[in-house]
Image (cartoon, rainbow, N blue to C red; front, top):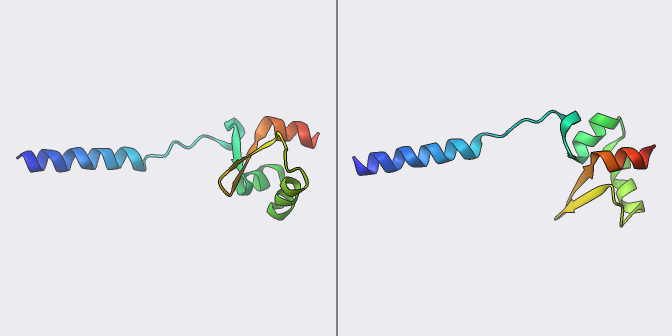
Amino acid sequence: SDSCRLENMMDDENELENQSIDIPIWKRYLLSVTEAAQFYHIGEKRLRQIVDIHPNGEFYLLVGNKVLFKKEQFEQFLA
């Protein structure tokens, strides 16, 4: 019964890991390139060009190789 209990605990942990919280795009602080392209109607290629043109831009965050746009700052940049 101990091994059964251990398996159930592991199942519970895996279920927690697999649950992702879906926050609507308009409520998010950060947007991926794909999400920003859909939200602002700007092509992904153009968004990546904007990042390249502004290497120290305050409106995006680099997480490894991934670009995440800070929504409020990016909107100020676009305005």
